[in-house]
Amino acid sequence: EVQLVESGGGLVQPGGSLRLSCAASGFSFSSYWISWVRQAPGKGLEWVAHIKPDGSNQYYVDSVKGRFTISRDNAKNSLFLQMNSLRVEDTAVYYCARNWGLGGAAFDIWGQGTMVTVSS
Amino acid sequence: QSALTQPASVSGSPGQSITISCTGTSSDVGGYNYVSWYQQHPGKAPKLMIYEVSNRPSGVSNRFSGSKSGNTASLTISGLQAEDEADYYCSSYRSSTTLVVFGGGTKLTVL
Image (cartoon, rainbow over all chains, first blue to last red):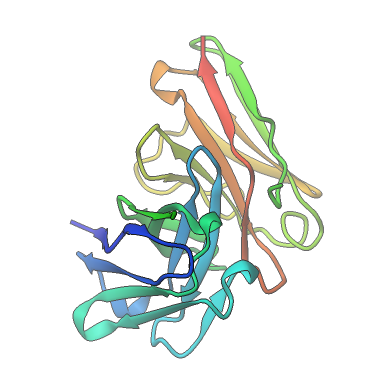
């Protein structure tokens, strides 16, 4: 079965750090761009970052640049998101998602999400 | 404020057809055929329904169709069913540092 499973979410104070993980199975992980997409409580979806199949290039939404780092370990079929200097507005469910299609701008496989709460 | 504009809500009766619009700019929706649509039920992850404007992934009902004209994309659901009640999001590639943008979402109510 093709799937993505996130972990690592939790409660953290403003200014703190958290590392999210995403375990992939059922497909050739090393062949795909993979993204993080988040959804604040009661709000819409927001693309956060994505990474090239070989890990050589990463792209971020402006609001997380310099604070978040996306990385991957293709040997372990795993994706990561290191989140530093967390802000209250980073509170959201974080999904990992497989990029799909010619432009890589669609997401065809999603994990179940992991909740990150930034609060004092 | 979301990058792409969608109506907050739409509604229809079972068996009817509805259309959800998604308006962007020439830097995203109007400039590329990379518009996608997602369905999200409460507490669940989004599900890809349409990609590259009008393509359906395997397993998605042909009651769902997509189109685009200028800077506005549309999702049409025909033969509405109770299970279609959900939130729907559009997204598009954008030629900027933010490579993928989403709409604010549309809540579909099946009356």
